Length: 634
Image (cartoon, rainbow, N blue to C red; front, side, top):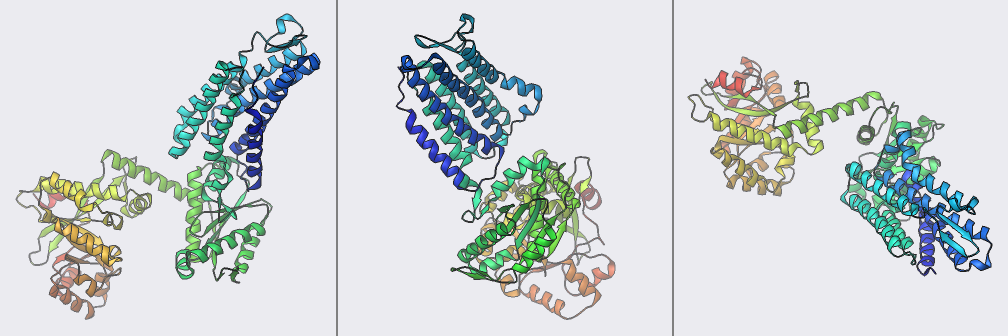
């Protein structure tokens, strides 16, 4: 007799999960389809198990054929469930083994063998040698000679799931996902062991239900993929959808980006803007009912429409719609949008490249408010940026970043007294990548802190090695990016590096741009902390940002570097403003450096109006540190 008290509540809970699953918008991902199959098959497994137990417990009331059929249905469902639960694991981990036809046949062999042996038990079970999985006679249901095939099949697919988890675990981005898949497989393993140990208790289905609940909560809850109160799918959904269909994407993307989103959010406030975004999401869905609408944060929407849509016509409809305000009981917003149309031959590019290109396009039209078509060249450009990023990572890992130096000349003596440290990295073929290319990529990828710190360390190492030489320079300037400047542990980190090489702090000056001077309170606090640790600051690229005399007066700069644009403009058309401003700087105690000096006339002009130091191609372009030593320090 079997104990079936665990079974009926599970069927009801599975019904609730199915109802919720169908009540929300769904992407239709492969793994979602497999999950749906698992829930349906598990429900059928439980129901056929209940019916089989009822019939087997009262076999005298039923024909032998009925006993055979209900038990056969259960075993077919059991074998199918084992394979389907393995298949879900491979879908989550993007296991590619089943793409090979021969491997696919081998993987499915136990399931097919189990089903075939079950059918043999039904149709040929009256023969002694065909009592394989089970048989039925006048004395009821009996286990067959190969009944343990159910365990072989179950353990086989659990083992394959663990192997897949080991091989493809890196494709699970978040730690929660990795732990969920591990827990999922361990629960299934425990279910098989308990069935083997307690065959009279139908507790296995309880554990299988637990495994289903784990993956539902971790992966298949539709709410994870929705945004703007269900009006659209979110960025996670877009990435998942694109990853699955990248090689066969037959949908046409249309990008819609709110013009000047951040400024508009400041004007209307967060709550009103959210209402406006929900209105936009619902409108886009109504505009193209067969499309999928994704919201990718910061006012950016992506529609994936069917190929029969005229995207230019839809773009014009969207523009016309935004000539009218967005209205709801909570808000009335006047917004405009930019439209990104994509003419991209994408199959040979990665998901990351395609998604990144789409987002860059959305950011661009969000700044301009235009309707712009983005072609293949944009994908190629993104690929090049990925390559540069790889080169940056390689330079940081191998510490192969090269230090270049540009001399700074004292106007009173005409001699080189200092230098500006600049970084150079090489690509994988050994060619120099221009800083105008790799520095923005380092900033966007979050590697600028490591890059700047490595430059600082190499500059300290250079000063340590050159200290005591007959013609050693007095100081070296190292650039500090805005991203580095906001680090609260900056003083401790840089102090540790400079102490490592045993040089005085006044040997290395830190250059910051006016971009660091937006927040007065933080600027003052950070500069005071660094100054207390002995560091000295130089203001770089003066004239391109936010500084003024009042703000400069509060900051402990030792030097102000005039941006080359100011230097060039003055040398072309001299006027009284710049000389007077330099006199004010000198009265405040600042030394002055002119950047971008390209000829003797410019050098004399800047010297005559009061500049203390000169820097530019007239003296030297940035050169490798060995060449600098040979040219200026030997």
